[in-house]
Length: 188
Image 1 (cartoon, helix red, strand yellow):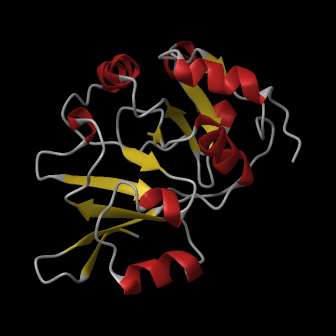
Image 2: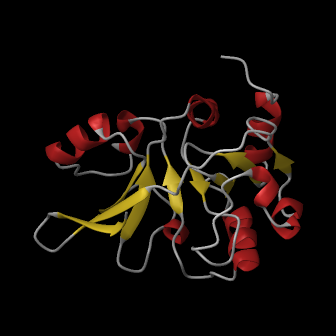
C-alpha cells in the first residue's frame, strides 16, 4: 500500500527515541516506540500525566500474544468481530518495560483496523504508544487542524497521511476485566 509518508522516515524517528504525530483508526495521536523511555517521558511531561498509563497499539492478535499471556477466547473472538475500535486493559502483561505498565499491573492495548498504523507497527517490529494530543481526555483532537501547536511542536515527525481529511471518529471503546474475569466498559 502507498502512503503520503516515507515509511523509513517514520520508522527511523521511532527507532531513535523520536515522537510522531499520526492518524490512528480513531483520532490523531502522539506516538513513540514502546522501547523509548525518553520519548514516553517527554510525552508524559507535556501532557502533565506522569503516572497515567497510555494505550499501546499492536498490529495483530499474534503480536498481542507476545505481551499478554492469557487472552480469554471470548475476547479473541470480540477482537476479530467487533466493529468499533476496542482498547482492552489486560492484567499481568509480560515482555514489556516497567514504565509502560500501570501500578495495578495492567496495560491498555488496541489492535487498530487501519493499514497505515498496522504498517508502522509491522515495519518497526513491535508495538507503539498512542495517546491523545491533549492534556484533558475529553479534549479530543479528531482532525489534524484541531491539534494545538504545542503538541505539533513536540513531534519529531508529523505524518502527512490523512492530514487534510475531516472525520467525525471518536476515541476507542475501552474495556477492562473485572474481578470475575468479565468485561467492564470504561469508555463507550
